[in-house]
Image (cartoon, rainbow, N blue to C red; front, top):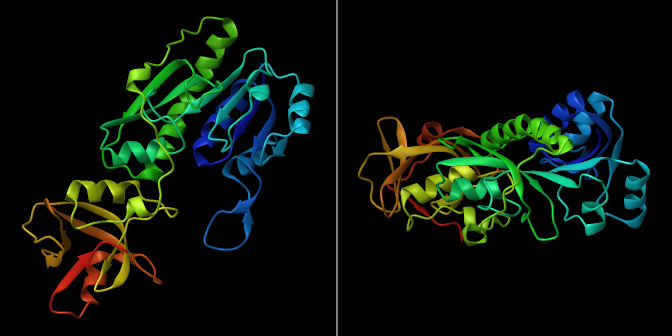
Length: 305
């Protein structure tokens, strides 16, 4: 089976590797090189780097032009497989291949249609997160699915859960494509009454707030990323909470206390213990080391304005 694969971030890498082992990947399409870390240097996408290691041809595309679509037609693909490509595809691409266009979506559809399903699942406190192998159609993530699988979220952060779901998606993708090729795939329509959406997470949403519960703030820490970090202020100075856990201790709302070697932040309901932090302009460090450097008799924390 001839496959065009379209993907960009780390989530898509396991799927590409699995396809390369099982099928004929005639081209890998990914987003152009971009500034992806704190430096100003252009870096290739994770998928481009993997394709180079596998010796696969790569096309960088920011959007689908007529020339790009004609190029796809010239490759005579049997199917197009997408995994977090990063661009809405036109109908001309969705209908180009005889077996259609299949997507590895990082949620248990119809829950969490959209751009940030993994972070939304964590923020909502979902007990399980998963993937769906689905048909891409004109409407956003609305196509039928033929396979789903899930893992417990537990304490996994955004990066860990992304890796777990990327590997899970790759595991389900290959047998799904074999069933699609054989005409034996069993498709399930999504229940529109159960649809929830997963828009991109903003920095403002990830700001920690003493007026919220400890559980809400912990979910923000768990779902945080460099693009949308979990931050607060202590005595007017910005602080990112990198890792944290629930704390069974009576700490007043908005207070910061050091007890039993742990740095505790009081919330409207409960408290959380910061394990590692990153003060603005400094490196990540253990929260206890940061606390020892604070010289105020009483520390308070606030929502980042």
